[in-house]
Length: 336
Ligand code: SAH
Image (cartoon, rainbow, N blue to C red; front, side):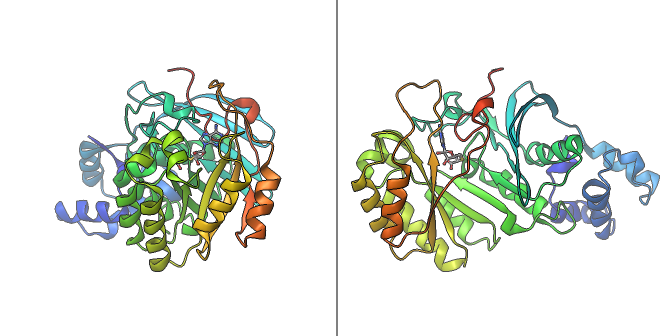
């Protein structure tokens, strides 16, 4: 049985039409779920009893559970227990402008980036759409807040679970859903080229981030196995195509690892690749993990200055959650 929170508004409209009901009932259900946050179908009082019974036969509204919360300065990490016993994590960050939430898109990850802890648990399965939606709903409920921004940068590769992630985005973005502005949603990919192309044609206005992390194939092959499938020039062509179709600046993520990708040459090479593109580079201070091989770069500022000198917009990612293992690349539920 499907969870009701798996359905986009248009899916719900199709459902009502298929059972010979008026399609506006879909909006009423969406309003119960996402405006009133009412999750008992029996309490959907503007639907007649018969219809509520039918809905209950066809859907459930089961919830994943918050299993543990760890707290740092301006940051909280949530461990969620899924209905099948798997675990995922999400990280809530408190900024001046409000709250942003980093959500997971898969149980484990198959991309195998050498520096990332999340990928040490191989992918077990995709998250269903409702499991992504519920990360937001449960945290908003437990913190009594509204989340302003959502980044799909937790455990998993969102474009390896493309359909569910797009449905998730459509639900949270819909004015009758969670009504999060598209510009307040960011999806980050390690560079699955065919999915970047599909995404380019969606016209969603959602922010796109690319985890590049190396300026040449030789180096990228060593730290990101996906590069052997889609190399840098293929990824850059896909991003250029995206930029042509969407007037949205793309974020290039670049994790700064000591003596691996932080040389002056790397900075110049990176600048050359990105020259003239509507992108900005977000340098991520490497968060050290159990994997002792990699250390944080001490050259972040030098690297940034070279990029700036070459005319590339560059920022350094603000750090959250290091002491609770809630930072980029550290999410991996220790429970599993
Ligand atoms: N799979 C997606 C989503 C992960 S986003 C992607 O690859 O984009 C998380 C970001 O943190 C990615 O850019 C990832 O490469 C980066 N990252 C991974 N491990 C890290 C670490 N230990 N320190 C800092 N950033 C890391």
